[in-house]
Amino acid sequence: MPYDTGTEKTAMQNKAPLPDHDEWTHLDLTTTLLELAVVQIKHAMADNDESMMALAEAHQAIGNKLQAIATALTAVSADADPDDTQSNINQNLGQMIMAFQGHDVLNQRLEHVCETLEGVKTHIAEESLRDNQQAWATMVDGIEQRYTMKDERRVFKTVMRKGDGSNPPAADKADDDSDIELF
Image (tube, rainbow, N blue to C red; front, side):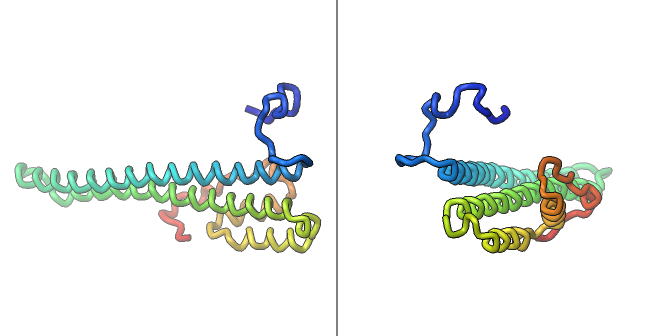
């Protein structure tokens, strides 16, 4: 749903909670909304971590049972090739492990987004930083330094060079064939 620009009921008409003080400003609301975004992302990451842990445990149990099945199949059937059966199981389990790595990459990217949002929130909230160009430049340099994945650094450079994030560059699919990017 697109952001409501005022054509529908406003937050004030809906009695949405706003920062609790007498002199409301857009800066106060902006910092509160940035905090909300960070908290929501972190909660989603924690929920996802719990799901991934359950999935990892199930993966381990399935792997153990498949090992037992392969061993039993080899013992029962003279035609069964234990190396072939074991190879197929290992290949499928390897594919599952690669899918788990996608979760780790997503968590790392979202953590970097949270760190960026927290930095922006601090720079907006602190009057001494708000209009300090050097402080903002230092924060932006810190964002770039925290990126550990090649694709993150490429997107950062592209968006910052353009100064417009409306059409962010697509993920670099040329690197998808490499098994694991260490970060």
